[in-house]
Length: 309
Image 1 (cartoon, rainbow, N blue to C red):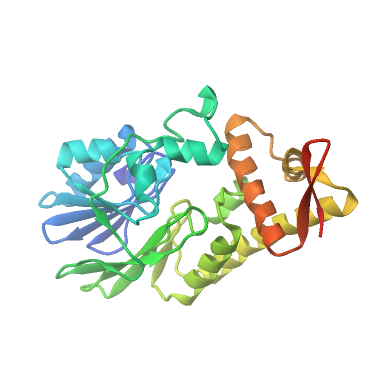
Image 2: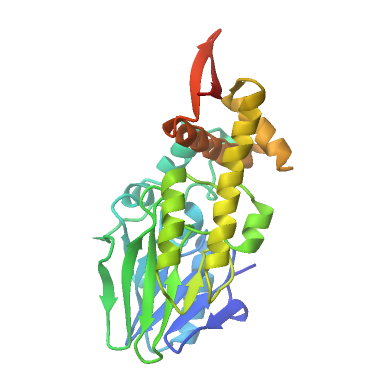
């Protein structure tokens, strides 16, 4: 789905959502516009700028608030900064990858990645972060709209969500980044990229405890009740854990063998991009299960293998 006004929801007079491959928040506060994320590319940035100008012609984009540093969330930053002079705001842990995007690829691959994934899906154009946002910090507080940051790590190092309150409409929207995934996304990618499994589950619990009129995953529908989606994401996470345990009950396996068999069981045909993303995620699951003392590794003929503890 391409970002456009045709794929837009005006939640209140001051809070709009542009739906796309990555959903974008467009918030009007007087003469200022604040964006939540910027899409995956310059093309997305152009579409966001056009939509913002049409929605709020008397206002100007003041800042882009990046929930995290993955390229599909900050890929439009550079274009929008050049066109509008907007500032980039993000958390301390996401700042390095926004300013030096090659880090994202290096982390996912665990070294210099092959040429096939050295492109803008994994590496956005670099931009400078001018403001660091902390958990619970007021992001802005204008006459009509206010927002504060909520720490939601797990999917990535220091991801944040943004709770936005329209003071005139008395409605709130919780922009969740990739701390939770929508039903369609989970149906298509049952094993979404996750850097820290424990923190991902903790963030899911945190989301469920925070009251809001609306909740918006970056990849999903705008919803009014979040508990069922939290349950779906938790179930997918626990099922992947138990799948790995059941595989290791039969015999010790290398990391590559675990990856291949988990992909087969979930009917995921691995190509280089999925191999990198799911492979990195499986390694995170293995580390998590080892930390829980459910599994352990050992070396055999210079192969690292995993077995039940």
